[in-house]
Length: 288
Image (cartoon, rainbow, N blue to C red; front, side, top):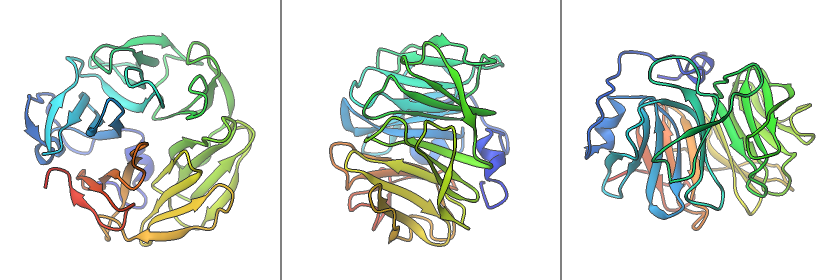
């Protein structure tokens, strides 16, 4: 499991232990954690009661009772995953095909049922371990593959934007400006206001395991030992919302329901999928 000193290892997608590609219909969230690694998640815009889960063996969805089913027949490894901010049928991803190699930048236009490579990326095919789309302009995307690459045409073409921050874990884009990008790293939270060409530190001296931004300008970040923290882009003074679902551990991925921002879903360091209905003050395992 991911611990301090292991963030880089697991963000690189290196499997710790064997996993089985056989993910059947109707397994539970607890069973999913024993079968694969979880690389990303999001609320389904078509049905916010459903959570989309990007895994080492394809894209899954979870029902409110915790039942997990595959979205499609694909068992590719979706290392990077982000849904379109407004269109529920469009999703973006990157990672590894089941047979090995890299996927490049891929896209689904049928809610994750099928995927096509849109571009190989610079020096590709790439494997974006971190992938983020601008909430205000989804034609603008950022991906990490050695350096930070960016696309301004919905992923058709990519260019090197700048160096990635050291020990990068997660990326998120401001809803106010597509040129403002946040990076969660083992050494703190950083921001770039020039489209990933340069970075400044806004939360230093602590590891930040995930970062998420919402349409109202909120910044959510998880700091092990402190918990889930919130600030705003206009006033980046972080306050603790709660110690988190695993006080002794950390959150790997966090998603906020765009329709109900107090509702959140996260993946813990033990691969538990947990939900909160009070903006992170209290958490429960999905399905319980």
